[in-house]
Amino acid sequence: MFNCLLIGYSINNIQDTKRAFMAAYIHDMSRKHDNSCKNHGPDSANEKLPLYADLFHKNRLDHNDLKAIKLAVANHCQLYEIDKDNPYYNTVAILRDADGLDLVRLDRIIRPDILRFKESVGLIKPTEELFNRTDDKKYNKFTDFLKDNIDLI
Image 1 (cartoon, helix red, strand yellow):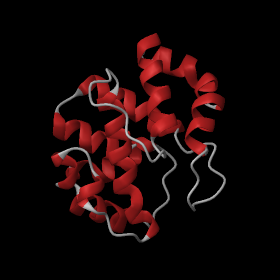
Image 2 (cartoon, helix red, strand yellow; image 1 turned 60 degrees about the horizontal axis):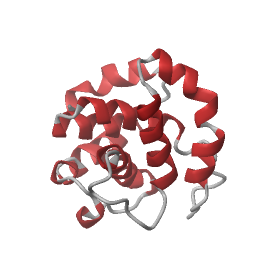
Image 3 (cartoon, helix red, strand yellow; image 1 turned 45 degrees about the horizontal axis):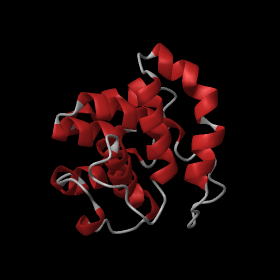
């Protein structure tokens, strides 16, 4: 979720950032393991989005926003990219880049060529710093996490 904020702030796109942030909230909820799993995105989109739709509506997201979130969640773990002319491309791309930056958590090297935004490439080092800062910490609230790490933005 924080990576979505980092990317969104960097590209100055509030609406798609809000959508990607909400998509990040549910994108791995149907994941069964940390290995390659191409079904967890579509499963999360179909099973979890309906459970959180009211929460998203309360945060001023409409039907089109939910369509963008559903596509981003379903597509984030697929091998294929959606077309750049798709109206929801930026939402999907923010989530995919945020998820790509999160590979540091799995002790993987983040390859710049897998990222869609040049701004995301510039966030590789801050993402690594974020991981190193927070790997051994426990947070009960996302707001506490933000307070500790907002200086990265």
